[in-house]
Image (cartoon, rainbow, N blue to C red; front, side, top):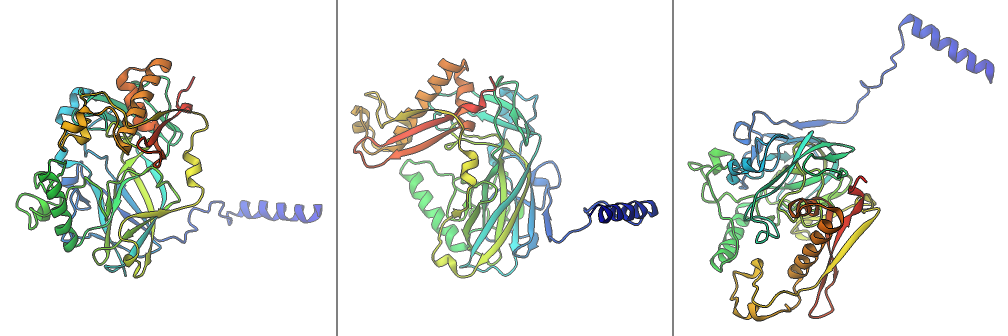
Length: 417
């Protein structure tokens, strides 16, 4: 055996001396990769970018099922924010530009009525991210009325910020927004139901051509200016779902509403708590790699997003935690903001709401923020941001009438000390 080993070593030495051995395997490839590149500073400069949904939006790139598609994505606000930004800079943010999506991509062979299975392979994060409190936005928007900015230094081993000393957030990146183009019937149906909600006093963001991309379809002079849907809210085509469990390795199932599906990706989150309660996660741009499969005819069974996976959820479970439990209780005279669009007289007089998960989540979150301030010395704004990126709102039970229970679970490992 020693003689054989000596012969191999001698042969290797002779080959190296002769310059005939390649020691590097980089050139040994097999995968087909399709890159959907971003160009220019903003979505308006980029033919591979959109911030509205409509079936007439062209698909500039095509890929086959099984290809590795690399989406070069922008941050959620299509912003000019940097590590040196402050809360004062938030007034310059144009919300008409929200959610620049890279794509849409034509998946060869996909037809309306099919299901597109999208497996998340990898996310390479940019080195900068941010979390914001924006007045009028977020789960506790009535309690947090002043702007607040946190700029994060992001890397695969975690995110840190001068505005959040002593805290390091582990990377658990996912696609905040991912979806497919709607068809013409879906556009009409979804517009109608959202208009009805708006007429009842609810929140509905109707088509707005200002800042819309692509401009030739969705802009003020676009061919479908009155019909291009906003990226908020999420709908049956996916979009801005913000579901942190859609981690690397999971497969998202999306019904196809147009031939080619029109797959788009954007709004990458470096990390997020279940709830994204301040209105933002750790928002980043980055390179997202996915692989697709067509499930023929499955659109009859899967009519809205579903997803599947293996052990991925174990990777985002905290190793140690603290949790608060909320019930649908409130002060007499209070009308929670999410119920303000309804007839509020009876609601105001109640101290106990019936089967209300939203109020239970609100109470759990408020208690958790108070715990963070009391036990860890953060300001109320820092605590709110921390819950947005590192605390999960979890439904406990929906049977113990009238008090459904929601827990707010904080990952204590984020505190470096």
